[in-house]
Length: 53
Image (cartoon, rainbow, N blue to C red; front, side):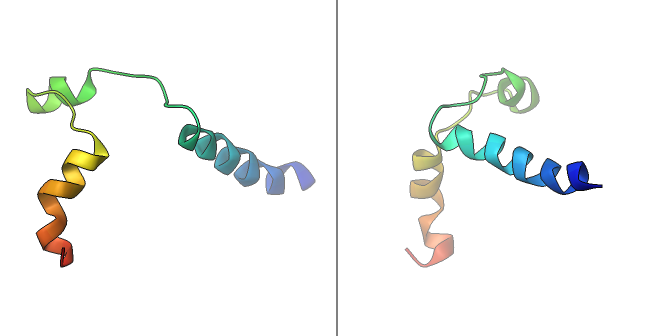
């Protein structure tokens, strides 16, 4: 039973690693939307008015 409690911590730690190193790159956005993915910074600039900025 102890191993079941460890699994979420391991998963969270693994996802947190992406803050330090980018995850694998894919073409999924291009395939689905027909355009390249935008950076988070570009998305944030374009959507700032929706958040009061």
